[in-house]
Image (cartoon, rainbow, N blue to C red; front, side):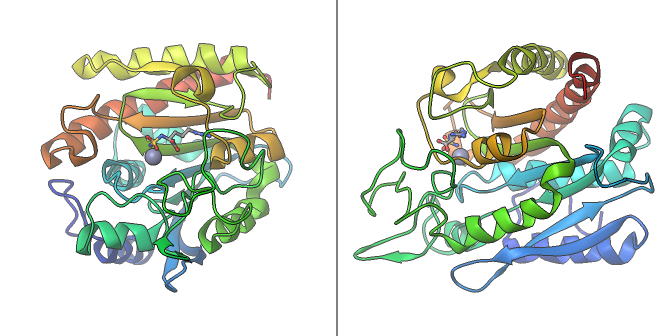
Length: 309
Ligand code: 0X9
Ligand code: ZN
């Protein structure tokens, strides 16, 4: 495991060191990539996992996993790194088959400055750390360039849902969008991890309308949360963002869905439902991640039969 055990929450440095370790340990399967830069100059590191399946550039054979766009949601990077480890080490045939069926672009933290800030200064920090007058940071999940500032976002730099000065004002969202553009047409799925509330959300956030493949998303979502509940009984609710939680515009998954018509697009709001909230005890990292991996197996299995791709 390279010193990583998912028994506590790891710092950004530890996560990055672990990704580099994977690149060295699995040179044929893991490529460490710099997806972008942060306001404070940190790299946004990710890994590309490829177990040898050839892709032809038009086929939708790539999956993107986004973690940690909101800094305080520590269970998100923890879950994403757990999934990476399972894809590399699991001997469960279903996990192996899932890992080997796609090329995976996986970024545990879309907001490294914010994540470092939650470790060093302010545990409940959510946003980026850009300077905007008297206040700092934009909500990186309100800053993407699809229906930007069309509801559920603030123009007040001191608000936790400040959408930024303009769409893609934040270097983090801008550079990750550029990275996603390089794989966009090949994307079969885009999955982001947040906490908390135990929800499985799909587009869109700016409107309650049932757009794109709403019906397929709902039916895949239901199968996915049923599989998630099987191991420990953890109950999730699924639906589109605007109807299930609140109207929220400028999210990453909406931009990806609209721009690239990606068939499978979901956002997990992980454990719990508020007893601990963002401060989820570390002894829940593994059970949470196990049930999420169960649910991903079901999601991709169901997607193959539901979506004519
Ligand atoms: O408000 C958010 O950005 C997410 N909830 S959280 O409590 N983690 O902040 C929900 C994101 C839903 N996705 C989109 N709005 N596209
Ligand atoms: Zn969040």
